[in-house]
Length: 342
Ligand SMILES: Cc1ncc(COP(=O)(O)O)c(C=O)c1O
Image 1 (cartoon, protein in one colour):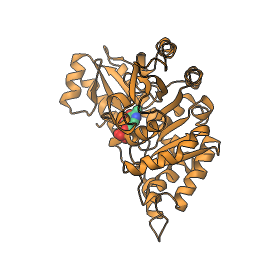
Image 2 (cartoon, protein in one colour):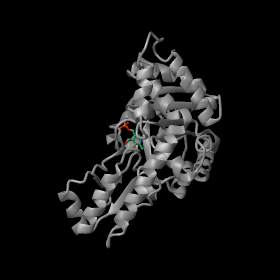
Image 3 (tube, rainbow, N blue to C red):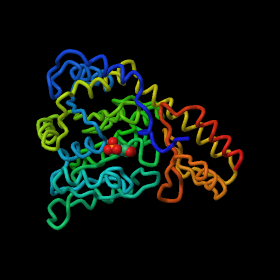
């Protein structure tokens, strides 16, 4: 029973087939190939716009750090949730790639920034006060790190508040697919139409091998050359880009990525229901996507540990269980039987 992460899942067979299919003949390097050009067309369809540039990375940390490095100067600050991946899980990469930008941490339940905290931070922002690091960017995450989904309305509202104070807006979409599958919003509605300037669009957790696309919308396209220069300097300019791009074609063509996210979300709902059927189990956060955060009574906690169920103890006292497109029904059945024994 492996519920450790969606990154423990295999890649979807279509991704492997797409890579094999482009493994023939020569192709231009560094993203100048036909497969990468195809990704552009697929992204244009998916996001309903042509007003964008993009770059493909192999990891979410690289894509977040590169994205933020063109959005915030080395003497500026990025407002984000205190549990954001960029704060807790990226070993200072955003600060490193930006050459010293500061993260300004904001509170809020379920890893969603509290509106009052955001308003206060924006109201206190004073770029002319030399002693304080002024906010230049707001970074949101959807799904959040607690598995909850911001609505399009909230993203739109927060982006408008940030933009009114001259900030630009980043969205960490490592699990964007799961948030879309939950809310029913379109990719366009949850990104540029909501005021997102730069999206890090994750496909790895959804079913790719390693494919995280930085998408610069509208005005932010002016930074595309700077992004590529930073990608090169930091070693994120893969020469054989066609193989990364092939993953995106497999995922985006025909909407496979959303189908896989729906599957993962549905498995997580089943898992949450199994857990909640047990006396004493409660959810720390609503299961909006493919992650379940459950507070377990001691008897169940012991049983889960003894059986070697792979899941993470989470700060705050819950356990995180993650489902993926490949979560087998047999894992869910085995968990059900284990809980029945407990
Ligand atoms: C919210 C979020 N952002 C980004 C990432 C990507 O990180 P990685 O560098 O492991 O691909 C993750 C992975 O766990 C994540 O949960």
